[in-house]
Image (cartoon, rainbow, N blue to C red; front, side, top):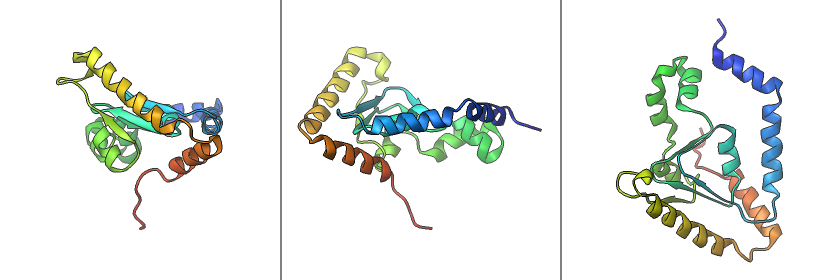
Length: 162
């Protein structure tokens, strides 16, 4: 029996999506301007890889960020997409988790009840973080900026030697 996810994955490769994502990451890593990304809801799939190439990555405190959906993870690992909730916990895809693993640079506070409860306050919090990050990145030599971006991407996360 061939699973639907496997067929979709094969189709994506036949259409060259993997190569397109890789090319995009390569080109983005060479941009000669600072890149600041903010995950405001869900950053996932190939888009999550692109977000990772940024000089600074922030997340709203209730957002999630992963290169694979919990359903996809559960389907691959346990052959059971209904275990998505368990997969989400194992994947450590929350802003708090990713900050602890040094995958993101910071967490942007949301109003009580979530970002949708007060869009103005959320926007102001995002604006403050963008201004702060922009000031940190301005004036950095372009070669230093792109090298720093490359090293950040290469060293992302924490690893344990097995």
